View 1: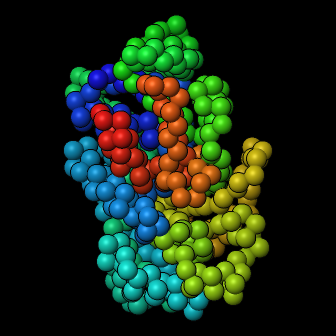
View 2 (view 1 turned 120 degrees about the horizontal axis):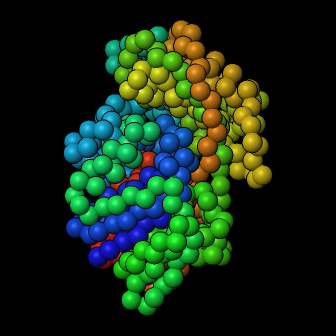
View 3 (view 1 turned 135 degrees about the vertical axis):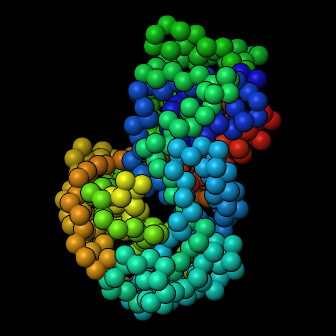
Length: 375
C-alpha cells in the first residue's frame, strides 16, 4: 500500500515507521522544516511508572518497541535509565509504599528504596528525601534527534519520502483511496491518508473532522548547562503522584487532602520531572495550563519553584539555565481514551490527542493503528 502521512511529529513518524516496517510505501509531509511542537519540547521520557492500569499493556509494548528501535537506530538515543520518584513527606511515602506493593508493581519494575539505596543507584542525589520509588522500566530517548534518525532509517529502505516545509492543503477521499494536495501545487495519491496534526486542531484538521473531542494543554520547561556528573536515572518529586492515573487511590486522595502544594505549584498545576540529556544538561519541568487563550510568554515563578525542588533533591546548585520554553500538546477529552482516531473518509483518518504521552506511546500507537486498519 501507499500511505500519505500529514504531520512530522512523533505520532506521524511513528505511524510512518509502523507502515514502512510492514513493507508499505510512505510519503510524509511536514509544514515546518522540522517538527516544532510537543515532539521536540518534551523530556524524551518513555514513562511507564504513572500510566493507568488500562494503558499499562500498551505502554509496556511501546517500551519494548523503543528498545528494539534503539538497537536498530542508535541515533534515537534510547537508554533504559529508569526513574526515581523522590518522596519528602509521610503522605507521599504512603503513596510510594502502596505503588510498590500494588498489583502492577512487578510489571512496572517498582521498588521502594531507602535513601542510601537511592544514592547507591544514583549518586548525584545527595539532597533531602525520605525514600525513592524506583521504576526500572522507565526509559528515555533524545527527543530532538530521534525523528531525524528515524527518517534516515526509513529513507534507507527506499520506501519512504519526507517533504519538509510542505503544508497539506486538502485531502480528498476518492472512493478507492485519497488524494492530498500541498501548498506547492503537488498531488500525492495514496491508498490511505493519515493526518497526525498534533495540537494544530484548526485549518485542515477542522475541515476533515469538524468537532474533534480534544483540547490543548500548555506546559513550561527549561534546560540547564551540563551537570558535570551523571544523573543515572530520571527523577520526579512527590507532586507527580497527583497527575498520573497509575497512582490514583486512597493514598493519593489523602495526599491531595492533607498536603497542599505550594501556591506557585498549585496555580500552575506543577510537578517536577527531570532527565539528563546525552550532552549532560538537565531538562526540567513542568506546568499544566488548560484554559485558552494561552499566554505567549513564560512565567518565571514556576522556574524558581522547579529550581528550588531540584536543588533540594540534588543537594547542590543547578548549572546555569540556558533555555526556557513553552510547549502545547493535544489531549483527548475522554479521560479513558489513550488517543483519538477519527475517520474523515473511507480512506482518511485523523489521529491526535495522546495527551503528553506521544513520545512514550508513539511506536505502540503506530502499531495499533496499523493493526486496526489491516496494514
